[in-house]
Length: 53
Image 1 (spheres, rainbow, N blue to C red):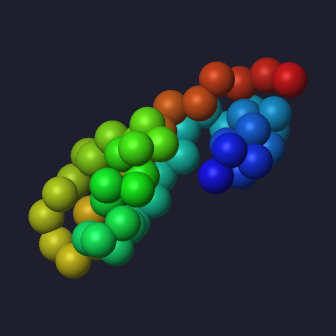
Image 2 (cartoon, rainbow, N blue to C red):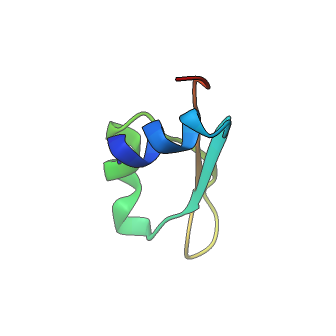
Image 3 (cartoon, rainbow, N blue to C red):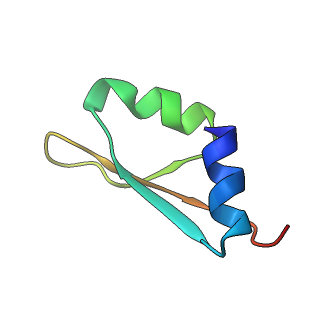
């Protein structure tokens, strides 16, 4: 995940969004992701990135 986040930020991506499996939410939260939509089978989480090199 760290590599993905670094690659994305180096390419100007400011925010990542994922539709996660319900049992993966704690994994993402431990990495700094925030739940933005908890309903449904696949909660939506987001993470703001710092852009630049």
